[in-house]
Length: 350
Image (cartoon, rainbow, N blue to C red; front, side, top):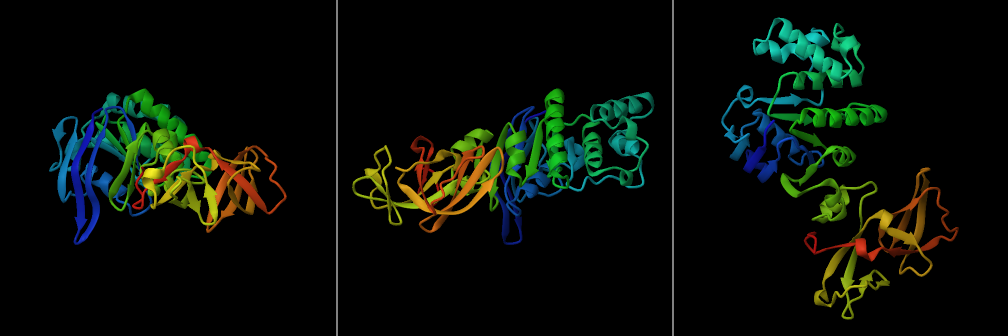
């Protein structure tokens, strides 16, 4: 496996800038996620790494080699597509072994490597079937098997679990992570699903509008989002964001409410900021300064989500288990101030 480096990588389609000046390093043996909404540039970035799109500017390095101008075949990357791209007329065995065949691997070595990877991904009994005879989860495993049957420097996964149901996605995440650890694979994993990224990645990059907003370990990004976009994109429900004005005495004015943080904000007097607080860092407290109307209560067994209208903002409160919510239409909330975030007028973390 190998390290992947992107330096000043850009892609323009006419006057449209799809990817802007990306600088990233994916470490050897790392599971790295590119996360963001549709149209943010993550798939375009991956296609440039694969050699399927030519960058408009910048450099791509794999294992110390500059591969920017090389063809896909010369880059030694494995790729799993969203739709799996299995050949419908071939058996599972032939689909898995296709990368070996084009490299001239034949006979006992061909059979050994196909059987080995099929066994790892529980496909040994399905090798003589065709893709149309497989379930979605089996097709997904066949596509992964084809990508890993030949050793590659970097493996690229383009939303490979998006076509699976919830149960199969959970199982697929588990075996992908196990396979990556066992083989020491360097993986770039493109997804719009922040749960997938949080569950799988050693580190991740959150993208918006072709720009990398933040890079870090999933929990670090979750706890300390760099921008209001990241705060609102990561987490389910996402971080609550309240518009607050800093008063001369250091308190925060939120609509007609006054909040008293336990830290000095007088250096920011007169500024209008965004106060971020995760749903699990709010608690019901009769003495709480945040007050609002209960809009909905979702009883989910392991947790209870309470939606509360605070001034002009609908916020979420996560309570443990089957929590009892007061019958009164108005509730008082207390934030855990040690776990709040403040963002400036441009949405950047202070």
